Length: 108
Image (tube, rainbow, N blue to C red; front, side):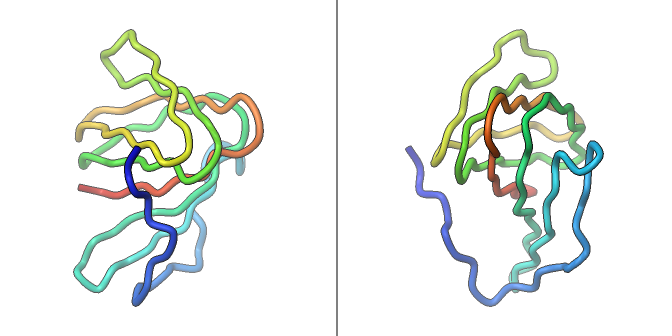
């Protein structure tokens, strides 16, 4: 298991939420002083497909999800303190079956 951040210091948080799928996926953008951009969000139960432009790293803070990367027939389960990466110009389907899945998405 990897070390998932529990605190971000010295950042700017955009107050306007990123709302997807009728509010079932909601995140806020965080801008670091070094120029890095990431989002902190929650996913409600359901199945959701996202497209990527840049490569992304998804770190699961709490909850569980199933993930299928575009072009793959494998569906993998991820839980708290686990992460997965998605190539740029691609996409992934993420499924949450119960509770909330909390995540950090870093744009690589």
